[in-house]
Amino acid sequence: MIRVAITGPESCGKTSLAEALAAHYKTTFVPEYSREFLMQSGGKYSQEDLDTIATGQQESIQNFTNGPLLISDTDMIVMYIWSVVVYGKASPLIQKLVQQQVFDLYILCDTDVPWTYDPLRENEYDRDELFKSYYKKMRELNLNFIIVRGAAEERLQAAVKAIDTLKVLP
Image 1 (cartoon, rainbow, N blue to C red):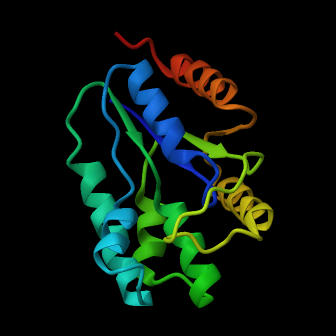
Image 2: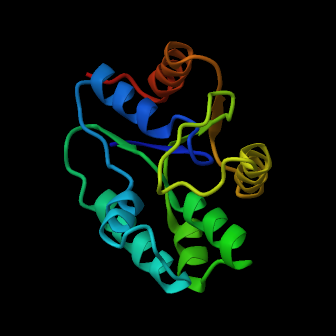
């Protein structure tokens, strides 16, 4: 199974790209568990809740059995950076999950798309700084990643090209 994680700051097109990739490859994707959790909690959370969210995301990824391509609408780097930005540090669990996660390709979405309001989002004005944090962490972990920029179709084509180089999919 080819495993692809889509990552990046809030409102940078992760879900839109996950949906487009799933349509392109005629599959489904692993949704962002934090959205489900935050909708149930009214957008409120604590530092301990981030461990719950990370565990829920990890379980969703581990339980995915729908074909030769796993597309995840987020990853543990999102959890790590969210923890550091909001609480100044990531929990030992999140740090461990960042080290343990294995994806064949990470797709880092740039912030060159307009911010879209959502009551669950928190970082409208520091997306560029957050993007730099994602880039730095991915380099630090020596991950296989690409950056996608531009309009939705440009992002999709860049992602498809990168995924298709991993292995020929049916």
